[in-house]
Image (cartoon, rainbow, N blue to C red; front, side, top):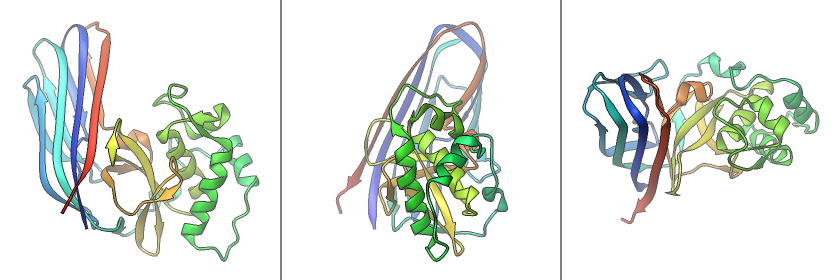
Length: 259
């Protein structure tokens, strides 16, 4: 068992006043087999109307509206979670066996698959490890090259990407080989930005795997949301009225609390 403390803050500054601002946030962790919530707080400003609920994938959401004029939007999520080994017992939703918006297996995915042979006697974990290792021959980490709209196929065409692209690509490879896989948004130990990884399914259990760092996940990753791909797991979405440029600032820190 370990305890992790997190601080997550996002601030959007608008060049002009905006209004009629609708937003949807996934910024706080939920309870899972491996993850227990000790403390949790989310502060949103300016003040508006906020409803806390769940989306169709069971993710915790803050659904809100600010009608008045404002030139910034800020939310801060803080808390403490307690974790054991990363695994989640759950009945399989067949949805995670099929391609989704960002994970369509087209030419570049097939080219990668043709380069690796998965012996049928291998375990699911061994197959995921082999696919991840092969993926790293086709995709290298580099920020600023792709965007949140980039698909797995596009990232492999470019040959560069970030954690979202690694997750989408490995999910596409897994599903093409009959391995159920889903996209995860969350936090990991350290300072910087939010992170994305995958869960793969074997014998009634979801396990975590981080293709960006090419490793199995045991502890140290705080799960926020799961879904078919990024479109189901975006941590913040919003629309507003007004003509304004936006400046985004993000702060994230996760540290282990020594027992």
